[in-house]
Length: 79
Image (cartoon, rainbow, N blue to C red; front, top):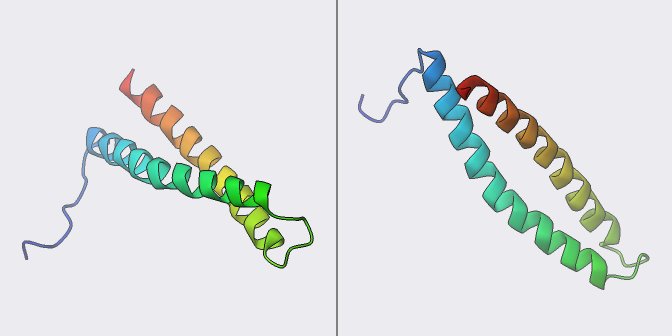
């Protein structure tokens, strides 16, 4: 079928895929983290959603670190 994903069968293909993945995740993640940080700054610590917003910030930081590590591996593979 034409809409089946293509199989990645080369190292270069995986590197290209990983590079695209980092880019596609980092862009929206930066927006989510930025909005969460703005919300966090405007909330009183006792506000009912303050804990949820804090979790969004913490988890977006975690995903960002994972993407940075993957990006470093991609750069190393391209050298």
